[in-house]
Image (cartoon, rainbow over all chains, first blue to last red; front, top):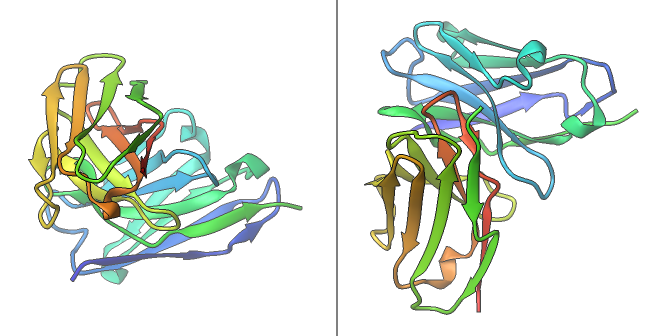
Length: 120
Length: 106
């Protein structure tokens, strides 16, 4: 059974750094072809892809947010960590982590999401 | 960046209807398109990948087609549980989602 769950602070102040952890089970990030992505969704708005990390340590980022994002993995702990700097109220959103599909960069299993609010 | 433009932005249909949602890419993306369904307060659910491959466990009422720049998600024999928001996604160059289509049941 494959599961993913996001965790981290749900209230951050403007200019602070957001750190979210995705803890997963049922697959390994050391297996060829596996990846974990981050996607966010502001309230009432569309999905927005943020980042993707692959089994071979390759990382891909949204061009519009590239300078603010870092994604890392800890294979032994089955965790992926997303860091986003210089948070702003417009970054208020539900943040999801999801497993990359076996045949490409789509997402076949998703976490429940965590609502992050940026407010002073 | 590759832009994905979905249409319509919302649609209302009756039980049993056939519903079609389209997605147009700003450049050719071969068949690197996926489709998701999202219910309120829930995570998205993968329906279709590689433009036309049905994800395991997903009802055969859902089908996808297209290649290049124009893609279609079709729901045949609409059921009450099919309401929600639908998103397309390209993975030809990084990842981009469409703006979504809201499906309401009449």
